[in-house]
Image 1: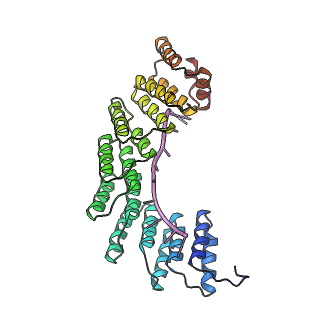
Image 2: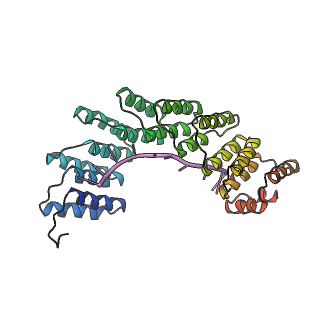
Image 3: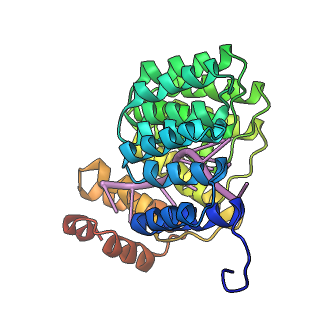
Length: 310
DNA sequence: ATAGGGTTAG
């Protein structure tokens, strides 16, 4: 471009800078940015934003804040992306409360926080298993009239999953549908993952009902997740039912499927002959190929005592 | 042109 005498613009600069960031080439980004300015280019909002992203994503938040300061000193306009990057830079290093503070700052400066802003902090609080703050920010978002989307809901659901709160998850799912937000494949998988302990099979059943109401077509992953979920609850009958249904609708079981079946057995822990014959009968009735099961056991490093069962 | 998320075994 230079040899042809073409000038760089905001498109060129942000593209180069974010490419450096994706590859973790911080020094190259620094040099490119410095050279730009030396050549007389005045960076605009998008170029500054991409620089903030580079340092924010890599956890060098002090440098991200320095870029922000330079941006202000040069009277460059700060937009919603700028603030969102600053929020991301803070939460990246665990400064969640500082991230929330940025939401207030931006609002007071006339830049309205959007779903991305809120989802960034909601997700961060969720990953930190901070149930109270996750829900608090989620509530504030709603009060201020910012509409949640599927990503916002996913973050809240993931947090509730980590905290084993299936009732709340189902409430959130209802809220989601009430707001016309459609659950995605992984949303359903997330819903199913929590229902782990004894007695939780009713939640798996409930989620399954919700799926049907939503006319959701389970894919292969969903069936694998369902088999695992029922397995974790110790509900072998439904494990078998799901396996059968999976075959019926035409999905080919894979290593994950067999591993989930194996782990259903392994979880029981009592390796007496009675269980052995019972499951072999069930598996045979379902046409589960034994060689595939052994292969799964092998690849999944299931304990040798389990292999002994066969 | 730059910003946020979730996925099955153990």
